[in-house]
Image (cartoon, rainbow, N blue to C red; front, side, top):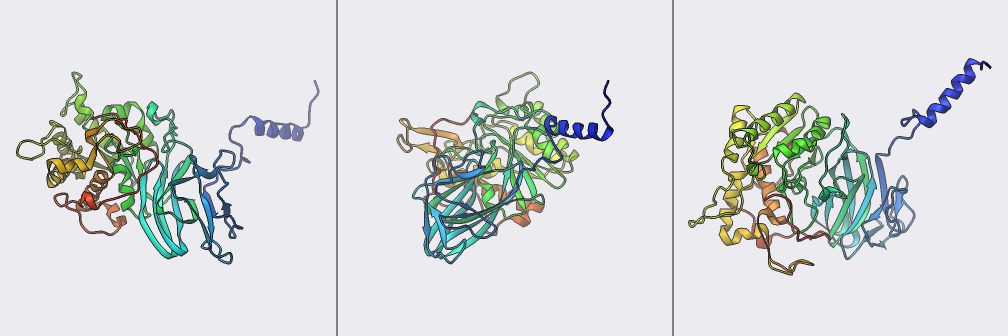
Length: 447
C-alpha cells in the first residue's frame, strides 16, 4: 500500500470537501444589499443601472417583472439619480431575489421637471406608500418589507394551500408594485435590517394578504401606517382556523423566527365556528388553542395580542348588526382577560363601522359589485364577509387605534394622523386607491 504524505492527504480532503459539502466556508453569501439607478444612462457611482430592457430572471436576480413594460425619461444628464426615471401608463413591477428577513426599502420618486403621483405596494399587495405627489421635485421615502420562505429552520416547512403556490408572498423575491396616475421611479435601495420590531399576524381571510382585486384585508393595509422600526409579517391565510393554522405548521414557522420584543397578533373565529367535533366549540378547543398560541409566544419572550373576529355584515330590522359568530368573540375576550393579554376588540369596532354606514351603505366596504365591474365578471359579487380596499383600510385604522389604546410599544412607530372613530368612518365616496393589475372573481376560502 502506498502511503501519501500527511500534507497531500489534507489537501486532497479539503478539495473533496469543497465539492461534496453543501455549505462551504468559501461559498459566497447571498446578497442582502442593493442599489439601483433607474433609466437608460450611465449609473450613478455605487449603483447598478436598471433600464427598460432589464427583465427579471433568476440568473440575474433582479429586473422588471410579471410582464412590466416601462420607458426611461431623461431630464438632465448632469444629475445622477434625479436626472432620469422610469415610468409607465400601467402599473409595473420590479423584483429582486433576497433571503428571508426584514428589508429597508428606500425609493427616490418624482420628476424634477414635471408632476408625479405614485402608490407603492409590496409582495402580495401590501400597501406601503399611498398617493405620494411630487411637482418639479423628488422625494426619498423608506419603508420595511418582510420576506418569508416556507422552510422552517427547526425542520419541515409550511404546508401551503394550492392557492398559495406562486403567491408573491411565498416566492424568493422582494417584489414592488408601482402604481398611480404618474409613477416616476428614480432609484431604489434595499438593505437587510435586523433591528426591526416584527409584528407577526396569524389569522384568516380577513387578515391575509389577498393577491387579487377587489378582495382585501386589514393585514395588507396596516403596513401603510408604520414608519421604519416595525415590520409586518403577515402569516395569515384564507379559510384557516386556530387548528388548521397549527396543523399546517404556520405557528411552527412563526415560533422559529419570532424574537424577544416581537408581537403576534391573533385573529380567528369565522372558520373555527364551523368545526363540529366533540371537543370543538368556543369554550373548548378554541379557548384551549388560543391559550396555546399565547403561551408559546410568551415562551419566546414575545408579546401576544388577541384580536376578536371581524363582524359579518348582517343587520336586523332595527338596522343593528347581528352577531353571527356565536360565543367565539366572547371566548377570545375571556382568554385575553384570564391571561392578561392585550385585546383589540375588532368585532365590536366593525359593528360600529357598519352601523355608521347603514345597511345599504355598508356594502361599499365589502366585495359587493354588479356584474362586469371587473374583467371576466359575468355575475354580481355579493360577499358579506370579505372586504374591498376601502373596508380593509378602515379596519386597519381600527387596529391602529387598538394598538394606541393598549399602549403597545409599537405605537411609537405609527405614522402621525388624526384619531379614528369607527362610528365616524371616512367617506367611501371620497376614498380611492389605484387598483392592482391582478383581479379575480373567485371568493377566498372561508366565510
